[in-house]
Image (cartoon, rainbow, N blue to C red; front, side, top):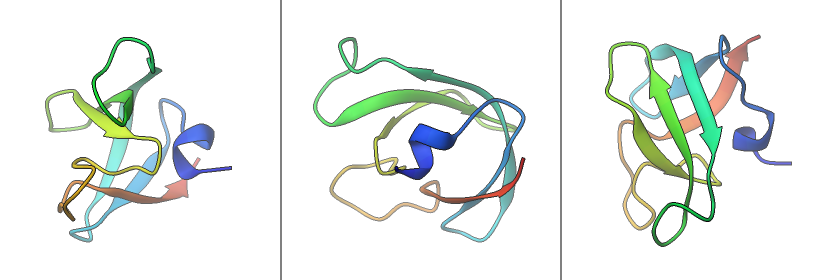
Length: 73
């Protein structure tokens, strides 16, 4: 099971840049998004963005906004 499959609103995640962010909203939308993006995630302090099922903000490049792990539930 990937991090994204376990992720829910209210959890705190670790981003690649080392910051911890609260998940304000997450939606699984594989049929509505382009390419390898399956999730729409709204992190505290950021606009909502599309993520891959592996927690990547950009499917082909490392990004500081990549979601690496869940830190708090």
